[in-house]
Image 1 (cartoon, rainbow, N blue to C red):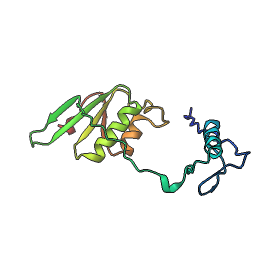
Image 2 (cartoon, one colour):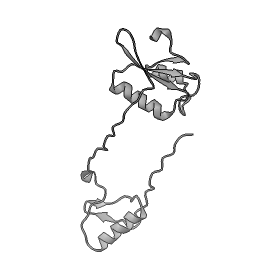
Image 3 (cartoon, rainbow, N blue to C red):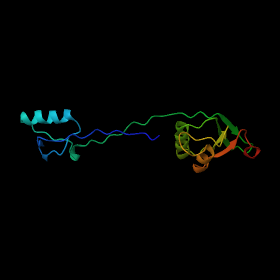
Length: 146
């Protein structure tokens, strides 16, 4: 079932209230409408939601740490990070896609059931891994990886 997003319903502006730069088409809430009416009645100069008043900001990044289930170091020195997954949920999928984009680690999956659904998608775990370029196997680590 898709996630619904609710947006504040814009109220009307029946009184035709104006800010310092002209008529306001509509308010996001009745509270904003009442505040505007009060400011107008008191003769206070103000602006309401003008593009020139927008302030840019950055949501702070959060640092996370990935702890692989198994680390295999082959005789040639190549390191493989193996993640055992009985169930592949949305958080794990997002985490591994971010890891793939931000690092050059060789991350591989060992799926208990590669034909089960990946998260809440219609894709299987194997389809998801193939789409994002992850190598995977079913049940145990294959000799070809060693």
